[in-house]
Length: 87
Image (cartoon, rainbow, N blue to C red; front, side):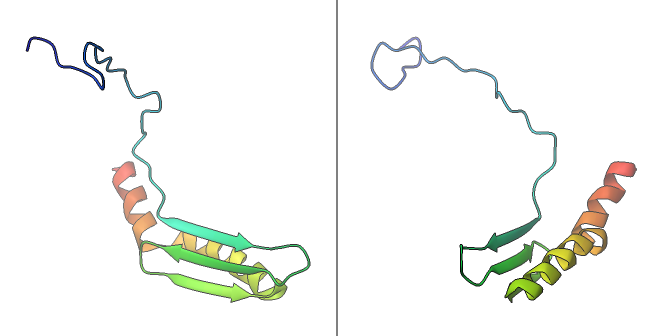
């Protein structure tokens, strides 16, 4: 009962450092676009602040993409995070 055992008995456990250490950032908004060939495109824009919008059709999907990009500047969750980082 000296050393902890791995998956199989007699296999030592090797703990390695995380190869992808986080930098403190994490996603808060997602833009999902589905544009199958020869079909009508659809898109959804979701954010942890509660925003949840969708669009169907070429023109509306392009408008939603632009709206999603502009939401990055006005999202209350994003502005709070940037304020904390600046302090």
